Amino acid sequence: MRALRAVFLFAAAAVAQWWWSSHLALWGLAPQLLLVLTVAVAARSGSNPGMAYGFLWGLFLDLLRAQLFGGNAFTLMLAGYAAGTVRRQIDLSDFVSLCAVVFLATWGYFLCYGLLGAVFAKSFLWPGWPAFLCDPLYNCLLVPLAARIAAGPRGGRP
Amino acid sequence: MHRETQISNYILAAFSALALIMLSLPLSAPVRACKAGLLYLFEPAAFSGAQGLQRLADAPAGLSRLLTADLENVRLRAQLRQDLWRLSEMDALRAQNQRFARALGLRAPRGYAPLWGEVLERDPLHRYSSIIVGLGAAQGVALNAPVFGEEEGALVAIGRVTEVRQESCLVLLLTDESSSAAVYLSSAAVEGLAQGGKGGGPRLSVNYLAPEAALVKGDLVFTSPTSATFPGHVLIGSVAAIQPRDPAWNTQSVAVQPAVDAASLSQVMILRPGQEAGPQSPVRAEALRLVPPRRAAALPPEVRPSTAPAAALLPEVRLSTAPAAAGQAVP
Image (cartoon, rainbow over all chains, first blue to last red; front, side, top):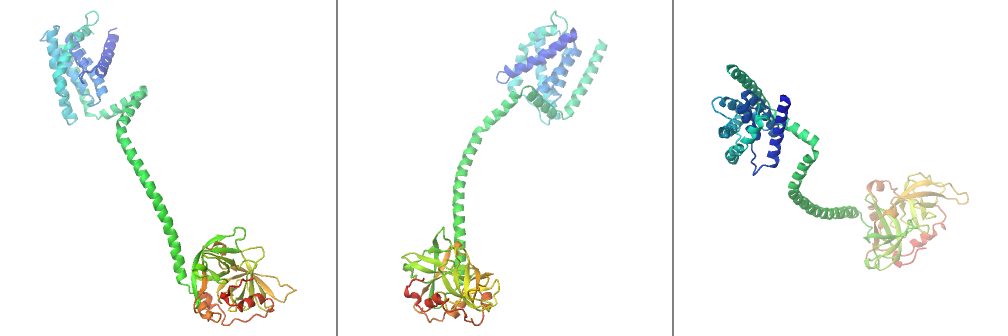
């Protein structure tokens, strides 16, 4: 049952990310739902589920973009590991602290992905100032929803 | 807790290694190709729509190129028409130039002036009977003037003028059955009377040849110096067939293929008598120039008179005694 729920969560989140970025992007900006969910899952369930979800969702993003295949998987997996590690020191059940982690994780995601591009694609993959400045705030707006999803139907592990 | 951290580190290392391997491999292009293939497989409309949008985006440039190409096409077509016209004009001028060059190499007998004219009309029912030439009294054409065609740089007798108008004249061809001219055969050196074939065919016949003459097929037939109409030693044709001897007449006859097909000529030469012209003009030496060297060499030194009955040659003999410029009609 948990496996089915995990598969459903993975597929639903992937479709939601694709649909939002395809149809609801404002001025080219869309929230990084998968990144927020990765951080939320890691904050709720630990590093291992966070890394697993992050890696698979990253692969999905790599399939969507196909610019630097493996880059999103690596970055989201690192975000899950970091969030899982941070939760030992910070109480991430609080929305504010989770928002802060998501905010920082967004910037960390951009920088890490850009550096991977500099290493493997011979150019720093800069997302642009609008995305770099707005996406963290945009992601923070999704934190309550992501935390609710990560908590599961009865508040347990996803 | 320590064990969970250790597992996390292992998972981190495994996922990191996997991700780095994927990053190191050139997978972006194959993944993009697979995506395009899947997209086309499941949603070809989107693929076609993207292509259509791209084509629409390129439409203004394509339309501009199309209009430019159309204008250029119209201009090139007009230029092509002009070039074709010029080409055909050049071909006609080249052919005319060749004819004139050959005509310059031909000399008319002393006392005659050559007039070159175009064939204007042919009788479609009697193509080997007569032609109308665009030279007339205004150009000095006289009745009974000899008419020649040109074949490989040599003059060939084809007929004589039988009707003169102001700007044109009617030429009766030798192949007409009412035509006749005194001729001789090159090898046998016997004279005869060339007459048009019956039925208006392309051949003519030489009759009243001496019975003892050895006739050879392929012999060249030239006008005789005794002809009143034509200067002597001008080629007419060659013997195509030797006719069976008629027991009623003590003569021989041959069929002659004209050297030039009068029905396909486009230009002819008419001799116009000049101031020095006269029945006693020494035309033989000048007329020899009308014959190409190889044919002139084949000519006999003397032309032996025919022993045919005089009555048979009477019409031509009668012509030979009449002045050429007298304007009499030829029977």
